[in-house]
Length: 251
Image (cartoon, rainbow, N blue to C red; front, side, top):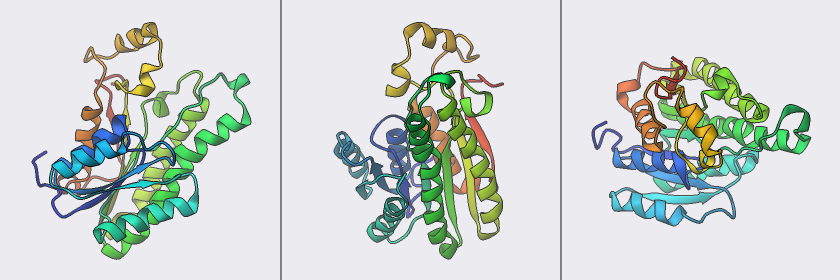
C-alpha cells in the first residue's frame, strides 16, 4: 500500500502496545494516518516506543490507557481520539487476552474475563466509534478475529467463542452501517509470531506450522498490511468480509 494513502485520516487501535496491534498502528501511520494507541491501564511499557516510531514517521500520536471492557472507558477512548485529531476515520479492534483451559477446567472468571475484553470490548468501541462515523458519513472498522474462530481449537473455548462472535458482530454491523459509507470487515490471522504464540511449546508450533501451505509462521506485518488495505479507499466496496491471513491454513 502506497505511502500517503491514509493522509488526513485519524485512527484508533486498541491493544496496540505490542505484537499485531503495534504493527497495525505503525503501518497505519506509515500510510499517512494519525494514530491513537490504546493500552491496558498499568501495562503501558513499550507504548512510548510505539509513539516514538509513529511520530518519527511525521504523524501525530497519542497514547490512551483504557480498559475496553468498561463501557465508559471505551467511549472515552473514542472521545479522546476525536479531541486529539478532530475526527475518527478508522477503528481497529485488536485488544484481546487469553485464559486457556479445557472446558471442564475453565472457571467462570476465565470465561467472563476473555469475553469481556475480546468481544464486549470490541462492541463498546465499535458502538462509540460508529456514532462519530455516522455523523461524518464515512469510516472504516476492522475487527481482529482469528482462524480459530472459524474452525475452533481445543483448550480455548472462551477465546474461540469471542473470535467467532467478532465475525458475527462484523457482519451485522456491516449491514447496519453500509448505507452511511462505513465499511466493517474482519481479519482472521493464523499462526503469527507474537508473544502470545511464543507461549506455545516448540512442538505445538512446529506441528501447526507444518499444516500451513506457505510453510512458515506469519509476521505481525503480514496482518498489518491487510488492515491498511481494508482501511484504504481501495476497499470502499468491501464490507462484511472476513479475510484469513493464514498462509493458506484454512484453504
